Image (cartoon, rainbow, N blue to C red):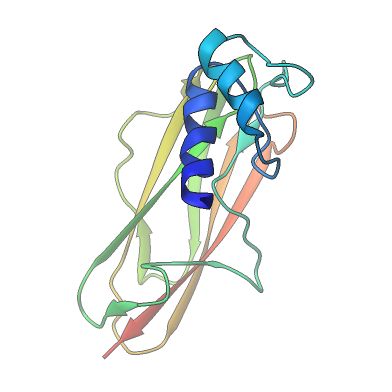
Length: 164
Protein backbone atom coordinates (compact mmCIF):
# COMPACT_ATOMS: atom_id res chain seq x y z
CA UNK A 1 0.00 0.00 0.00
CA UNK A 2 2.81 2.46 0.87
CA UNK A 3 4.42 1.84 -2.54
CA UNK A 4 1.16 2.81 -4.22
CA UNK A 5 0.80 5.88 -2.05
CA UNK A 6 4.34 7.01 -3.00
CA UNK A 7 3.58 6.54 -6.70
CA UNK A 8 0.32 8.41 -6.29
CA UNK A 9 2.15 11.29 -4.60
CA UNK A 10 4.58 11.54 -7.53
CA UNK A 11 1.68 11.40 -10.00
CA UNK A 12 -0.14 14.13 -8.09
CA UNK A 13 2.97 16.34 -8.06
CA UNK A 14 3.43 15.87 -11.82
CA UNK A 15 -0.21 16.87 -12.34
CA UNK A 16 0.35 20.14 -10.51
CA UNK A 17 -0.84 19.07 -7.07
CA UNK A 18 1.81 19.65 -4.46
CA UNK A 19 1.93 17.76 -1.19
CA UNK A 20 4.71 17.80 1.36
CA UNK A 21 6.49 14.39 1.38
CA UNK A 22 5.63 13.71 5.04
CA UNK A 23 1.91 14.27 4.47
CA UNK A 24 -0.05 11.23 3.32
CA UNK A 25 -2.76 11.79 0.76
CA UNK A 26 -6.31 10.72 1.32
CA UNK A 27 -7.77 8.77 -1.58
CA UNK A 28 -10.59 11.22 -2.28
CA UNK A 29 -8.23 14.21 -2.20
CA UNK A 30 -5.79 12.49 -4.57
CA UNK A 31 -8.60 11.62 -6.97
CA UNK A 32 -9.71 15.25 -6.99
CA UNK A 33 -6.14 16.42 -7.65
CA UNK A 34 -5.64 13.93 -10.47
CA UNK A 35 -8.99 14.66 -12.10
CA UNK A 36 -8.78 18.43 -11.96
CA UNK A 37 -5.03 18.95 -12.29
CA UNK A 38 -5.42 22.18 -10.31
CA UNK A 39 -2.42 23.96 -8.86
CA UNK A 40 -2.31 23.70 -5.13
CA UNK A 41 -5.20 21.40 -4.34
CA UNK A 42 -6.10 23.36 -1.25
CA UNK A 43 -3.91 24.42 1.65
CA UNK A 44 -0.81 22.54 0.52
CA UNK A 45 0.03 24.77 -2.44
CA UNK A 46 3.69 24.91 -3.42
CA UNK A 47 5.67 27.85 -2.09
CA UNK A 48 6.19 30.78 -4.45
CA UNK A 49 9.90 31.16 -3.67
CA UNK A 50 12.52 28.77 -5.10
CA UNK A 51 12.64 25.79 -2.72
CA UNK A 52 15.28 23.07 -2.81
CA UNK A 53 14.06 19.56 -2.00
CA UNK A 54 16.25 16.46 -1.61
CA UNK A 55 14.93 12.87 -1.78
CA UNK A 56 16.40 12.07 1.65
CA UNK A 57 17.88 13.57 4.79
CA UNK A 58 21.49 13.07 5.78
CA UNK A 59 23.90 14.17 8.47
CA UNK A 60 27.49 13.50 9.43
CA UNK A 61 26.25 10.82 11.85
CA UNK A 62 23.68 9.40 9.42
CA UNK A 63 25.06 9.67 5.87
CA UNK A 64 23.46 8.43 2.67
CA UNK A 65 24.95 5.04 1.78
CA UNK A 66 26.36 4.32 -1.67
CA UNK A 67 24.69 1.21 -3.10
CA UNK A 68 22.44 1.08 -0.04
CA UNK A 69 23.75 -1.38 2.56
CA UNK A 70 25.43 -3.75 0.10
CA UNK A 71 28.58 -1.67 -0.31
CA UNK A 72 30.86 -1.51 -3.34
CA UNK A 73 33.39 -4.27 -4.15
CA UNK A 74 36.99 -3.19 -3.58
CA UNK A 75 38.65 -1.87 -6.74
CA UNK A 76 35.35 -1.73 -8.65
CA UNK A 77 33.60 1.57 -9.37
CA UNK A 78 30.12 1.97 -7.93
CA UNK A 79 27.79 4.67 -9.19
CA UNK A 80 25.18 6.68 -7.35
CA UNK A 81 23.07 9.67 -8.32
CA UNK A 82 20.44 11.79 -6.64
CA UNK A 83 18.23 14.64 -7.79
CA UNK A 84 17.73 18.14 -6.44
CA UNK A 85 14.11 19.20 -7.01
CA UNK A 86 12.63 22.70 -7.18
CA UNK A 87 9.48 22.52 -5.06
CA UNK A 88 8.74 26.26 -5.47
CA UNK A 89 6.92 27.95 -8.33
CA UNK A 90 9.70 30.51 -8.94
CA UNK A 91 12.87 29.38 -10.73
CA UNK A 92 15.58 27.70 -8.68
CA UNK A 93 19.15 28.26 -9.86
CA UNK A 94 21.72 25.66 -8.85
CA UNK A 95 24.90 27.73 -8.95
CA UNK A 96 27.53 25.21 -7.88
CA UNK A 97 27.94 21.61 -6.75
CA UNK A 98 31.19 20.57 -5.08
CA UNK A 99 32.55 17.48 -3.36
CA UNK A 100 34.90 17.34 -0.36
CA UNK A 101 36.08 14.18 1.31
CA UNK A 102 37.86 10.94 0.65
CA UNK A 103 39.28 10.66 -2.88
CA UNK A 104 37.68 7.22 -3.28
CA UNK A 105 34.49 9.17 -4.12
CA UNK A 106 34.15 11.80 -6.83
CA UNK A 107 31.53 13.78 -8.71
CA UNK A 108 30.85 12.61 -12.25
CA UNK A 109 30.00 14.93 -15.19
CA UNK A 110 26.64 16.62 -14.74
CA UNK A 111 23.95 15.94 -17.36
CA UNK A 112 23.35 19.70 -17.64
CA UNK A 113 25.80 22.61 -17.22
CA UNK A 114 25.98 24.87 -14.19
CA UNK A 115 24.45 27.22 -13.37
CA UNK A 116 21.25 25.27 -13.98
CA UNK A 117 17.84 26.94 -13.78
CA UNK A 118 14.96 24.70 -12.69
CA UNK A 119 11.29 25.52 -13.09
CA UNK A 120 8.65 24.12 -10.71
CA UNK A 121 9.25 20.37 -10.22
CA UNK A 122 12.44 20.61 -12.31
CA UNK A 123 15.27 18.34 -11.26
CA UNK A 124 19.07 18.55 -11.39
CA UNK A 125 20.85 15.18 -11.20
CA UNK A 126 24.09 14.86 -9.24
CA UNK A 127 26.05 11.72 -10.24
CA UNK A 128 28.92 10.30 -8.18
CA UNK A 129 31.29 7.37 -8.35
CA UNK A 130 33.07 5.47 -5.60
CA UNK A 131 35.99 3.12 -6.18
CA UNK A 132 37.03 1.85 -2.75
CA UNK A 133 40.71 0.81 -2.61
CA UNK A 134 40.18 -1.26 0.57
CA UNK A 135 37.41 -2.89 2.62
CA UNK A 136 36.56 0.09 4.81
CA UNK A 137 34.27 3.13 4.94
CA UNK A 138 34.87 6.32 2.96
CA UNK A 139 33.11 9.58 3.76
CA UNK A 140 32.43 12.73 1.78
CA UNK A 141 30.12 15.70 1.48
CA UNK A 142 28.39 17.21 -1.55
CA UNK A 143 27.65 20.93 -1.18
CA UNK A 144 24.95 22.52 -3.32
CA UNK A 145 24.77 26.32 -3.61
CA UNK A 146 21.53 27.77 -4.99
CA UNK A 147 19.08 30.63 -4.62
CA UNK A 148 16.71 28.44 -2.57
CA UNK A 149 15.09 30.33 0.28
CA UNK A 150 14.95 27.25 2.51
CA UNK A 151 18.51 25.98 1.95
CA UNK A 152 20.88 28.26 0.02
CA UNK A 153 23.72 25.88 0.98
CA UNK A 154 22.57 22.27 1.13
CA UNK A 155 24.97 19.58 2.25
CA UNK A 156 24.59 15.88 1.54
CA UNK A 157 26.71 13.53 3.63
CA UNK A 158 27.74 10.31 1.88
CA UNK A 159 29.36 7.04 2.87
CA UNK A 160 30.82 4.40 0.58
CA UNK A 161 31.78 1.05 2.09
CA UNK A 162 34.32 -1.12 0.32
CA UNK A 163 33.45 -4.81 0.46
CA UNK A 164 35.81 -7.73 -0.18
